Image: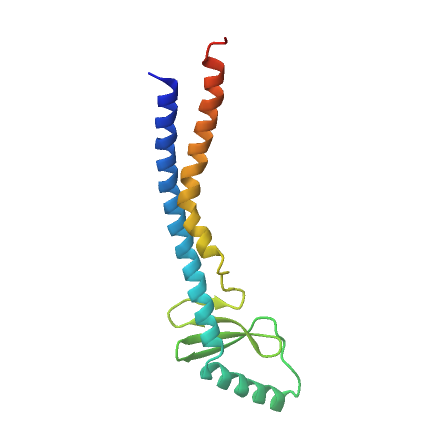
Length: 152
């Protein structure tokens, strides 16, 4: 068997396997990113909903009428069970920190919308998966062929 032909075939085989792995990794990462974007959008929609606005106004009025001061913000949560919202967890300044939904999801302000530059990056995973092993095998084969050729 020819070393050059064997190296070429091995590089193509590993390149195709790398492209498959890159495609699977791309799908997994894309799915996670889309879920993160959906969670962020759902949190923002619920945090700005009329249910939250009404609960904020009610709590602000109750707090000022009872104590005349602001509450202890550590783990300040209120059960709502209205709309899609089960519990609202407040941060200082009556800002929504997290929301538990009636479906059992927990959404927090810390869930940021993924950057748009990630999507083209995911498209590169299969190409990188092909070219990295293909190039590495070709380079190793090239170096190996230099040692195996007779000197003149």
